[in-house]
Image 1 (tube, protein in one colour):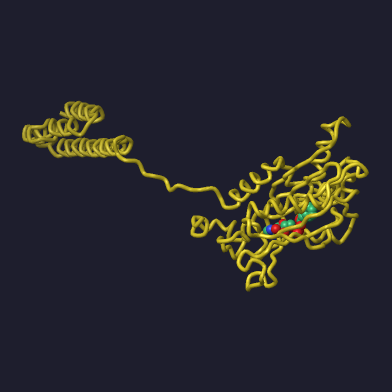
Image 2 (tube, rainbow, N blue to C red):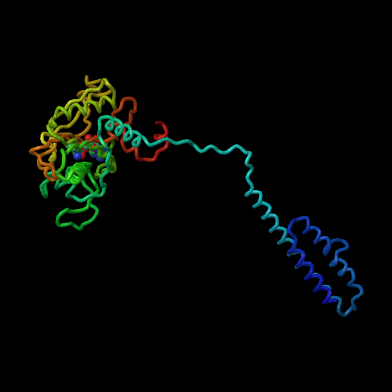
Length: 352
Ligand code: FA5
């Protein structure tokens, strides 16, 4: 009887494991545990077992029954999970898809693209120079004497304490004017003394300063213009900036050059634009009718020399503005805190 029970158990377990679907499993269950199932009949047959062995055999039948029931439950669970997984995996290709929300380019990228297109129209070429740069390009070659207090004006981030004997420290560029030197050196090298030097550069890059308030962010952009050639004068500078302001802000906007000081330009100016709200009459936003846009000037002869260009033959003008500030001053945008541009606040960004 014991041997017979073990055979039934092995047969049952093997059939249970082989059952590939719930229906087959139900059939196996009936075959062993149903009213005329093999185990049910074995239990009924216990009356034929000699009295002395009856308790022991009865217990064995119950143990076999229990392990068969447990195996059926386990296999049932496994088949159910498999069915669910299969359901999840299957895709109804006729279902309409979920439309992802459509985005748009960031306001600053939009301004950079617009500025680039405006200057490309008058022959400027967009370049990009390092944003992690030697002190020499960002200060020394721009006519800043060593330890000159003006170096502090840019509140520079220094990346390492190591200092190269010729090129100084490595910094995060506080302005894009390093591009002036790099562009002059590149063009001079390319010309190899043959032909005239002619530069119309637009260097747009990220710049970094330790500043943060409504009109300052620690990371911002600048676009730097540099024009070098023979007989370049303030007239060309003023004409170029007037063209830019009218193209970017509108025909009704005026500019003025206000005397200023930069180490790398002489004379130097700050460019003001008449206020978009009162058009120069004076209002709450601008107070005196004008808003400051950025710096500009005639390239200092020392800077031309550092760039490898002979100041006795060539002259040039340069300017450096922030696209974020330009955007802030555009009519209709009403951005009253520059930091919002980099805040990742979707309520703000999706408005534009
Ligand atoms: C300069 O950086 C000069 N290199 C510009 C220049 C180039 C002058 C060529 C002459 C010739 P300034 O520090 O003023 O100048 O910065 C120029 C512009 O950058 C500012 O007018 C402003 O538009 C923008 N800017 C400066 N700091 C920040 C800041 N923290 N956040 C946002 N925009 C800034």
